[in-house]
Length: 272
Image (cartoon, rainbow, N blue to C red; front, side, top):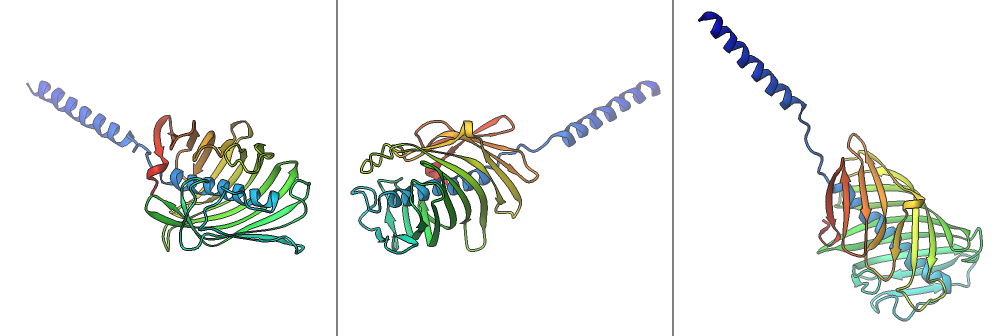
């Protein structure tokens, strides 16, 4: 009898030990989409800023349907350093661009011809905010763009997204922009196609490091006939976390985020 009880007791201890091992080996599933959402805001807005100001610089005038009447646009093309300022005031909905509301100012200053190699321009923001849902978020923008070849540009970008007065995400990157289509139809805002690829790094809301990359053969595509990014793959590698793969697939308000083979849907209409 004692031998039987000993065997039973041993089996119970073994079972409990196995359960504890399984429990200890179970890792929490990584489902955090915060960095993916915040980085999307930065990359998409950099795209829009590039397009808005480059479109104005290219022809030194405002296309009839490009900007809402509430946006004040000033040209100074007589100085050596030519300048364009877009002032969105205290709130201005940009329906023809992407449907978002903006406020504050964007300014571009440049030297040289837009189409010629070595043309350079700087883009900066002043108290610049963009709406997502019912919230406005501030973007601090400092971009330097140079003409590499005809309609191909190299952009060095320093952008900070302020989620609150204390919470922010920073991004520093080097991107190549290629204007693939639409340069000859200035008054048609909905036939432009721009590709971007490159690498960057920054700090997330927790002040942890991350890197980003977009390969040339998986370039992110802005088609101005759509209010969303329509194609491309973006990789995010946050410190001490798994890689996030953001896959833009078509003209809609969704992208797929792959974290360790698990696919999550990111809805741009509900970004917080």
